[in-house]
Length: 275
Image (cartoon, rainbow, N blue to C red; front, side, top):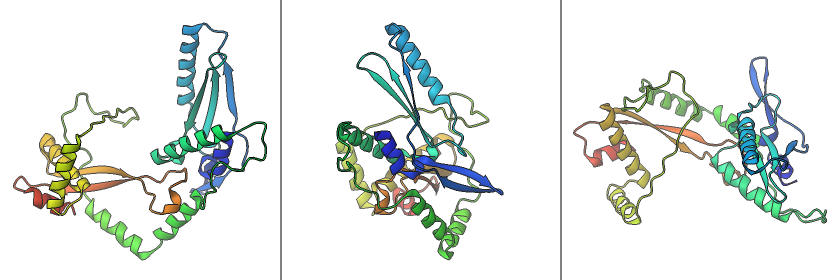
C-alpha cells in the first residue's frame, strides 16, 4: 500500500512514452495497484537461499522496460525466512533522478510506518503535492518557445561548437567503441581545514568554491591530457522552482562548461575566464 500510494501520488512513475506520427508523447496511466511478484525461498537451505536471492536480483535488474507500455516502477518481494523479506525495486531513469530517490525513500519509510491495516480512516501521512511532473513539462515547453530561450540556445551552440569529443587522458584500458553503463564511483573527503583555505582563496578572487574547484580540475585534466581546450560536465538538479522540491521525476541536467587554458595563465585569469 505504501508503494501504491507513491506511484499514484507521483504520475511520472505511471507515465508511458508513446510514438504517434513520429512525435513522442507522454500518457499518464490511471491509478492501479502495483503488481508485486512474490517468491518464497524458505524451502531452500541458507547458502542455496542466498544464492537464489542473488540470482533473482540479477534477473530482476536486467529485465528491460518497455517505455511505451510499462509503468516506470516495478517490484518483487522475496521471502528468505519467517521474519526476513527482501524487496527488489527497479525504476527507469527517465522517471527518477538522484534527488527523487531521496524523496522516494523518505515517503516510503513514512507511509510504511504510518500504515495500519486495522485503521482505514487515518489522516494522510504526507502533504499533498502542489504540482505534477506534467506541470513542469508544460513550463519547459512554454519556455522553449520564448525568444529569450532561442537566444540562449544559439549562444550555447556557438560557445560549445568544436569541443573535443574526448580528452586524451591516459587510460588503464582501451576506450570502448560504444559507451556502456558500467561505472565506478570514487568519493574523496577533504578536511575542514582544507575546505576553509579553499573558501578563503575563492573569496580573495571574488569566486565561488565551485568555480575554484572546477578551475583546478580543468587544470589537472589539461596537464594529464596535454590539451588546452577542456570541457567538463557537471550534473545539476534542475529544480528551479520551490514547488518541485518534493516531486519524483527526472529534472537533472548536465551543464557543460568549457575552459580554454593557457600555460601562462595565472589563477586570477583562469577564474576570471570561468565566469
